[in-house]
Image 1 (cartoon, rainbow, N blue to C red):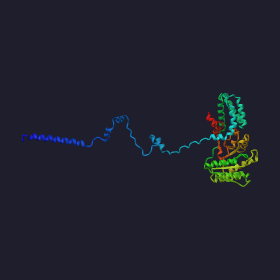
Image 2: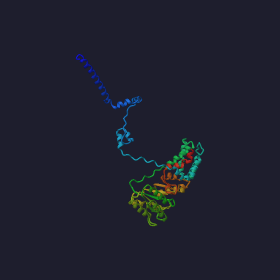
Image 3: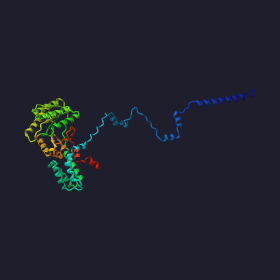
Image 4: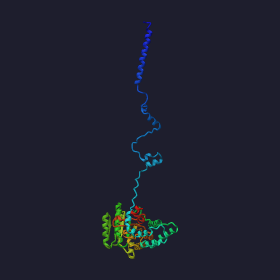
Length: 407
């Protein structure tokens, strides 16, 4: 037995070693993997995805707490910092749409008269003979454009023809448009800065529509949230005061008036003082209609102007002459006489929708060098339109809607 002891011990040792070995292997399999989960996930990805990852760079994307703006996209520079720190301005308001078609309708009588006759001269003519200018001259003078203005325009056309610049009807027509725009584009005086109210003296002969024009202007400025006051300076006609009071109630404007037959200068003085004290934006001073040939009446309007200036130095800031466009060349004569007596700052042409001789506008601007400020194209308040030379020329010379579509 003792002889076999070493053998038995060796066998036991081998058995123990085998048991220990298998126990160790089993324990190792139960332990958690030392590799990170990311690696295991990578192993689990299909081969195609692995290939795609190798070709594409890895980009880290973080979701901002707030939505990105265009400023967030700017690089971090000093300029971008200034942009970020600068106050955000309001977006620019869209430009007002030009209502040329509405203006064209208002000028339908002139387009059907003066302009239609001019167009007829050029229709179907591919080449222009200088003798055609004689026909143009006849049409323009008969449409009350005026002799002086007509000659000025024709001289420029002849010059263009001599230089071979006006070889066809389209070129001549465009030259006429250009000349009309040049004549009508007179600068209007700027409103006085820091002074309230802007005092406007309205003058003109009888029946041209001064009081109605005042009411329309008051309506326009009232719609713009301006405080307007009216002065009833026509003290000789009770109906004029009553008419002005109706307009005043309609637009919520105070009307300053005197007794019937009162001195118009005194009424204008009181109205100016009250407009200054009441912090009004505009004061419109009505005056009695007066014939431009009556010296005593023209002297009276000068006195009214001096009275306004005594009440408010620098006023009136505007003296607007109201002229009835249907009177044609007589309108030009009136304007010249009033200009000689007063320092006119602008002209308002009323009843332009009722005449085929709208060419008088060209004569007034060219000969007197006084800008047209407003034109009347109907009875409604909105029919008194601010005069814009480019729009007026387009309405006269441009194609109407039907012609434009056909072209």
